[in-house]
Image (cartoon, one colour):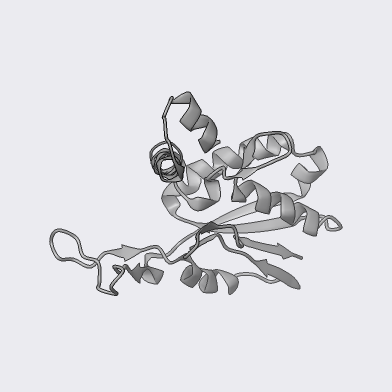
Length: 180
């Protein structure tokens, strides 16, 4: 998707560094800030030549994992301001699913609690501060997950998360699947 955007905008580059510069610029300007949240970024190419995001892939995976159950319940812990973006994508995904999968799918959203935010650090492990010298905090959704786990009654639960790592963006795991 981003390669297509680079071509559409007529951006030129002569080496890998130039491509990476344009890639990041488009990712930040056109994709990331328009949708917010790593789970919503369309980063994974599929067999149809289009792109899927982790939200879609994790939802489909949950339907497959719980194919023998009457309900596939999926829980996502997100920022409250991201909810409209998730709802739009959930509705688009439901149009692609079979009637049976739509009946079985139950998506729940809980919001990250600011009490689980972490202080932001600079590369030299110094605390990051704003112009007024106040500490800057970043979302730390994994801490919110523990409170949410306490709410569930289930025989089987898969805990997944999307995370960035030192090697760049990496699809690991996201959300919570459960069966009961």
